[in-house]
Each structure stands twice: as C-alpha cells, then as structure tokens.
Image (cartoon, rainbow, N blue to C red; front, side, top):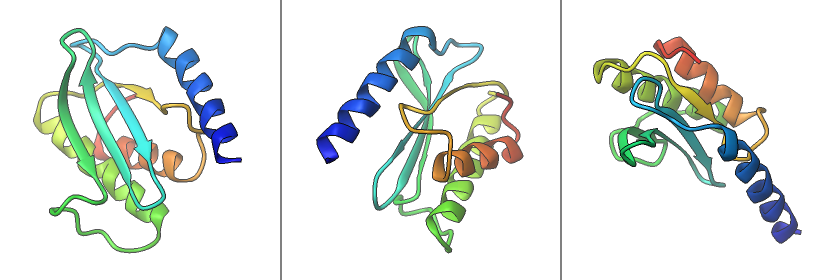
Length: 117
C-alpha cells in the first residue's frame, strides 16, 4: 500500500512542478513531511540554491505540542528567516501532498510570519 501512495504523490508532484518554478523575485517554498518531522526550504530555481530552510528536527527548534502545532512553528520560523533575508513573496510548493493537516498548518504559520503566497 505504501508504494501506491508514494507513486501517487510522485505523479502529483510532477504535475505541480511542471507549472510551478521559483525565481529570484518569488522563490519556491518547498515542503517535505515524514512520519517524525516536517521540513521547509525556500529555493531559487534559477540558480538552484536553497536560500532559507527550517525543520522540526533541527537542534535549534524547540516547539512542543502535536505535529500540527510543530508544523505551524516551522512555518513561522522559515518565514522569519525569509523576511530577514529580504524575501516577502514566495510560491508555495506542497510537493505532492494534499493541502490538509500539517501542510496547511505550515502554510498558515508562514503566512502569520509575514510571507505572501
């Protein structure tokens, strides 16, 4: 069953990435989630460079609560780092995941942190 879900996510991801790219003006906010944590990166696709990243498993991360609350905190953290780096608008790449649960919480946290998308 896991193989079916993974192949479905990869198919959705390809369709999303076909029409969504990040630029220097509007970099891409890419999200990855695992069973243990959630990760967010802001990527400039023209240079292939990660500008800002944040993770719920990093050593400097200290939010407690359930996974959705941690996701919201990761979103706020990546937004604060992005605003400090001079980025205010991004393109949200949900990476094949449904916009629901932890992905939605991360997006809401990023919006609260000051990112526009």
